[in-house]
Image (tube, rainbow, N blue to C red; front, side, top):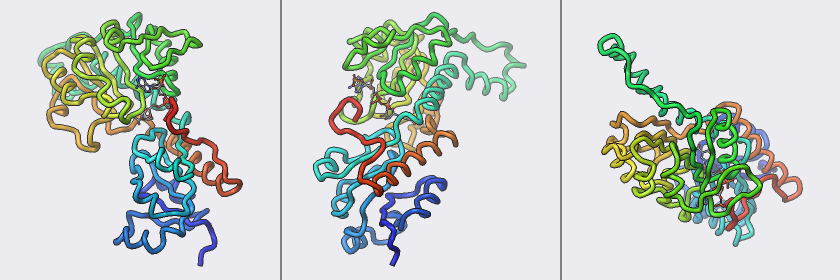
Length: 321
Ligand code: NDP
């Protein structure tokens, strides 16, 4: 029998991480088992840690069928798909992978913003379809310099986006529950006011009940027909139907989206719109960042099995959970 710690892996993870997990631990991949409930009922007590991701999530029932698990190590920073409070009540540590993905998530937000304001994707289609030759130059884009960008969320990633946007000459204002007087940006307690004053809104708050449909028709109307909405947070943060209607009716100018309700299903009504730029949840998806995230998952597991502490614990019921 394999004497190494037994780890339950919730589903497929990137090969770089799976190879390193298999080199250290005795790993069982839950999604490979034909009869998962039966397996867990018989052997759930063997596992001491569970590895998952924000994409795979973790059902509380799975955790409950593994009474000796003391760590849930997740790949990704978002914790909305993890039973953090339930785990904590059971004395189980939960870890995520913050900070190492700030830079790439920020550059994706800015890439989407520029793609919208400079019509990069629409103009690419224009050239490919031969329309440049037939119809001449396309409509003008918009400059970002001197414009206000409204950050909805100014945590680890939001702050990185704000700093990078300074290079483009943008004014930064932000909406969060708690002002950050240590920062050189203007706090706006009222999200509708922020939207009205901004050329673009960038959503980068956690998902979950506290931010569900934080951005609805009223906020999108305040952003207006010239406004750009960027979402690199979670699909649940915006009322997707209201956003599609506003984009279709011209009440909202553009949207650059990395996240959706019910991924990977993107409604045809959204995909058919000319004034959107769509990404398949790629904000942290560079080789460098994904490997750094994997290394942090491994560092949490290694430290846990060395001295029962972890590197990046998710603290429940705080600002960052
Ligand atoms: P942080 O916890 O560092 O920051 C969260 C920010 O959101 C804080 O400024 C917080 O301020 C604000 N916030 C939280 N709740 C609310 C609320 N109800 N109303 C207004 N503001 C709120 O998180 P990160 O920056 O590390 O990550 C943010 C999220 O981005 C992740 O949880 C994840 O869901 C998403 N993400 C998406 C990625 C992608 O691939 N598209 C990649 C990485 C992250 P305050 O508490 O003061 O309100």
